Length: 392
Image 1 (spheres, rainbow, N blue to C red):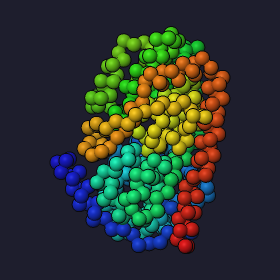
Image 2 (image 1 turned 30 degrees about the horizontal axis):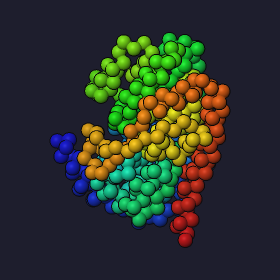
Image 3 (image 1 turned 30 degrees about the vertical axis):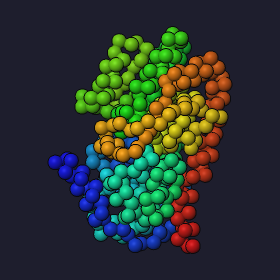
Image 4 (image 1 turned 180 degrees about the vertical axis):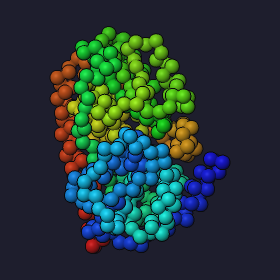
């Protein structure tokens, strides 16, 4: 039944949704639609958007279309400048497979009464048919990176504008090393990932391999990975945890941690290691930069917008065919992603270990660059671009 629904949604429902004929009106409030009460990447994307628009002084409204709300986690989160007036435009922080359900929930007629902007975070150069079918009903598309823009722009006549996630330096819990029994003088490497968004794409196996190569020469090294996912239901995550069983220098945490705990873990790390195969943006990499932590990252896809050889350690990667059972990636003909070298990453860990002061200096450059980049590509500026396009 699930397979039949996916086919129906991709090839029928997506084509039936009408495109709004309403013009963009900058004087009316902006509605942010998304999984606002869910601890998932698209939910965080929507919350970051709402915060950024609110801090810019724009009137906004919120529409939570969460499928599995977790009210306790986000009970205290409320942006300012909330408006009760009807929205003139909406930013949908939902990828195309999530949209038909949300649009039907709000009402198709209601959908047509506003200027609709899709915020689409795609991670490959080849775009699935369902995504292509969804392009026709969006009046504009925002994307988190130039990498994603190049993939999406040829599929629509609507404006496609790069708006990176407006990451900020968030509170970080002190004493996270003590919480996990990690010695203060240990060389701590961290990585945060969600198994649900394709464990193969996040590529934690390569992080473990790189760490083990490095740890053979560094007895004080410790790797702590925080994984989001259900170990009871996710076979890939279960196998990953089993692969480090008995290794007292590697720990994979699957328990729920607060955002401040995760930030605290990243901040007390000596290096953040992301050997992703592809990223639409690279949210955890950006968050690690904001926490002043030296970054080792794959030299491909979304992260290259703000990671360069001057501010990060970039791991060169050949491109290989995508092989994955995740519904979004299965069967994409001609799709490729990166295969970063664990040996090269281990060499960069050695560099950071041997020259920690230089590493922190480089991390400072990454933070300065990211702050400039985010300011130059804000939601506010993207909306101003739409206003200018409307006037021309």
